[in-house]
Length: 255
Image 1 (cartoon, helix red, strand yellow):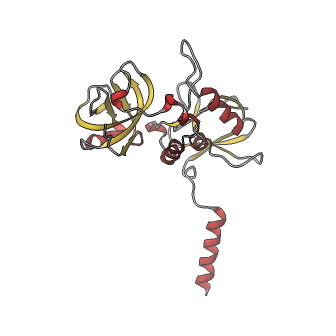
Image 2 (cartoon, rainbow, N blue to C red; image 1 turned 90 degrees about the vertical axis):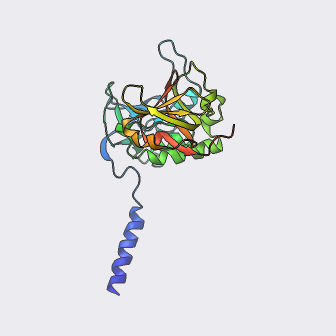
Image 3 (cartoon, rainbow, N blue to C red; image 1 turned 60 degrees about the horizontal axis):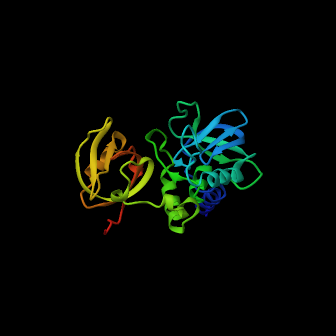
């Protein structure tokens, strides 16, 4: 009977506390009130600290001679509606600052003004951003991929826009430059040509080469014929794959 009571107490404690979440293993960082939203993946706190939310890539605003990306206004407004004026807690899982001194973090609301929101995940769930994983901030990024798949399937947010439909690698314009998701079928592997890469994977009927970086070296063993969904920065005929989460196995294309 005593063991039963102890077990019941432990069970009730776990229920009350809830199961561990993706952010529980990260290092708690600063708190602050959001006073400005730059775009769908960048906010500014009342301390003056800019925060770049990790694991996601929202449409950017115009800069220099580049026009704003499609769905930028909607993505920015989405973030403003969620978090402007609210207090957030930052969580770190690797590199904490970029070269612009922005905090590289996951952020979660921690006040009584509304529901508790994991901002990185919410932007993906609501179709305001795509997933983009960097090796030095990859902690807690894995759940974001499922949220993105769900948003794509339901055509939520930016996934309704023709500009964000995922092309086959063979259909990607040769002059394309920027972050992109592509589908394809692995046709072979060869030694790396790009700086920092350990191998190049070629895709069937496409000049695009996936440059596999050191953190994703295990991908060099993928067999020809596999269908993949790859994400990374494209320049010319090269896409950099910097982390295994940027490379998903999918059904091989039939075209």
